[in-house]
Length: 112
Image 1 (cartoon, rainbow, N blue to C red):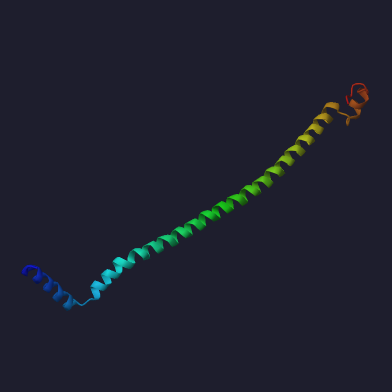
Image 2: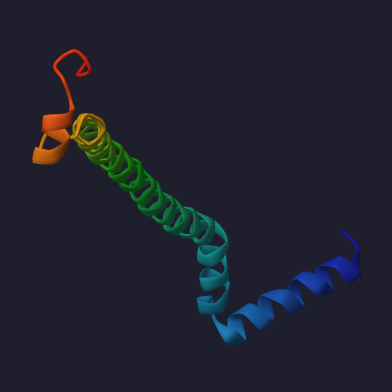
């Protein structure tokens, strides 16, 4: 070693002796443990996000099941309304509730 390198090492040793090893130990701990802590926080956040996405999909399944029930009920309602309107149309065409029209209509004119 050259005398200059020895002087630099002595100077660094004196500085460490004056300030103590507390700042160096803290810096080493931050460099070594810091990334692990950061990854733990990120992993926790990702787990919470995944749980939220999972809950969203479960809610969508419930929504689809309820929509299928509603669509089935709506189909029944449309069929019932169509049948009722067909009955109204048949009654209007035959007009068998009016006494005057009933007298004028013969049995041959009324279709099956």
